Every structure is written in structure tokens, then in C-alpha cells.
Amino acid sequence: MSIAERVAWIGVDWGTSNLRVWAMDASHDLLAERSSDQGMGGLDPDRFEPALLAIIDEFLVEGRATPVICCGMVGAKQGWVEADYVAVPSKPPSGDGATRISARDPRIDVRILPGMKQVAQPDVMRGEETQVAGFLRGQPKFDGVLLMPGTHSKWAHISAEEIVSFQTFMTGEMYALLARQSVLKHSVAVTGWDDAAFEAALSEAISRPESVAAKLFGLRAASLVGDQSDEVGRARLSGLLIGLELAATRPYWLGQNLAIVGAPEVAAVYEKALGLQGLPAQVYDAQPMTRLGLIAAYDGMKGSA
Image 1: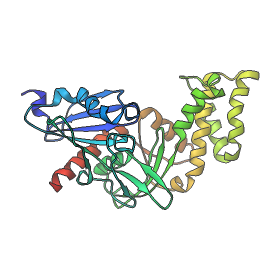
Image 2: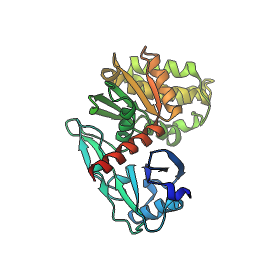
Image 3: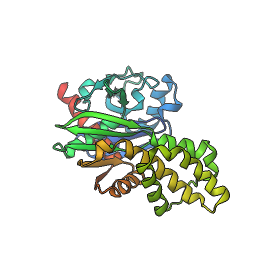
Image 4: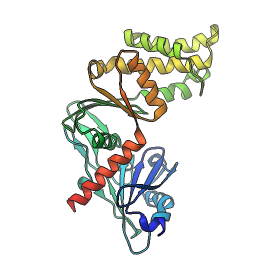
């Protein structure tokens, strides 16, 4: 039996920059995964279906419409089709509330999961709610705070299998802008690290967040009139920005049960930062959590059929 004949459904994580797919069998075992750089940010609405077919065509068979469950920015206003938001407090969206796409190719039945919104203190997420669903699939009794670091870090209060509230921080995007498009680009390395510099900058930002704007320019000055290396500059920039985030989210993490779901490299940095504040955290890789969340959504869709 070919792999296409064994594929029961396909999970898709479609972000701003990248597209990742998982071909799953009827028992939710992973048959294959693929990825490309065809993210939402570079596609016009009429290019989404061709971009998807280019990466999943090998998993499709004639005469059958394979379910394709998508999460992420593909459902944004600038995406393929805008999928609605579910308001918190609520369980993460299930497949029964997904938006169905009118695909031209009869071999695919595409659904896009809703995002989540917070009205009282306006905030939105697309994609992270699927990570929450995947995390809760394995730990349904978790009560505490789930941190999902990335370009836009999310801090979500979880209780009774619901996202009660959440808060977004543009820490990752600010780092990228400052490191690559500001005057600091001449003083911040692309690779390399200094633990002591990170720890010092983190402590400075948490204790005196109002001083961070001045300390940011200090990174440039220290490389011009001092002997600060670009690797130290990279670590200090990260420490200052994450320190700002931790200072603002103190009510979220202080004394709380905490878990981190993220890409391993960035999750490790946040784990270290929180550990320096005396707060241990469980750490989980975001990709498996997203896949588990898509499995939960597919089960929900089947259950409502």
C-alpha cells in the first residue's frame, strides 16, 4: 500500500513565514512531514491552494477528498480565508467550529481552525491555541500559566481545560527589528552567546525596566568606546528584552505553576530566565504540541459529523 493510500488526513501549521504539514494515518500515527517557506505573508489569496498542493500532492489520491486541518495565520484577515475568533474564557477551538474552504481541487477538504480573542483587554492569537489544545491533550488537569515564546510571546492562564485569559508581548519581533534594522545591528552578533552578559542584562531590566531604553543604546556605545564583543551584545539585547517581558508579566508567573511550549532554542532561554527568578518550568517542543492540537481538532470534527 502506498503512503498516499494510508493517509487518512493532513494537519497543517501555516504561519506568516513557513508552512509545515503532517500526513497522518487513521490511528493518528505520523506517516510523513514536509515544510516550505511558503508562509502566509508572501501569498496572495489565490496562491494558497497551489502552495498547499505543491507540498501535499504526493499524499493525495484520485476519487477521495482527504481532510486537511489548518491552524495559524492562514486564517488571518490577510490569509486564505478569514476564520473567526473564539472569545476567552473558552476551551481551545475544536474542528467542529472550523471554516471550510471551497477548494478547486476535489482531492482536498480544507478546514481552517478559529483563532482566539480577548475583548476586555484586547488581544488575539492564531496558532498558539492549537499548541494549548495539544498540551492539554496530554495534561488535561493542568492549572497554571502556559508560556509560548516566539515572535509574539503568549502568556495564557489555563484552568479547567480553558484559556481563561492571555497576554501577548512583541519581544521576538522587537529583538529582530533592533538586531537587524536599528543602529544596534553593528553591535549584535547573529550567533554566539555570553551567559553572564545575559543574566546581568536580565536582572537590570527586571529591577529597573524604565532604564531599558538607555541601556539599549548602551549596547552600541559599549562596542564603540569599550571592548564589548558582538556576542556579548547579542546576549545583553536578549536579556534586556526578556527582562522587560518578565517584569510586565510578574503577576502571571510569580508563584504559579508554569509550563513553556516553544521552539527548543528560544524555550531554553526563557527557561533559564525564569529559573534565575526561582521559578522552575516544564518545557515542551512546540511542533509536537501543535500536531497533537491538530489531532484533537480532527477528532472534534469527526465527532460533530
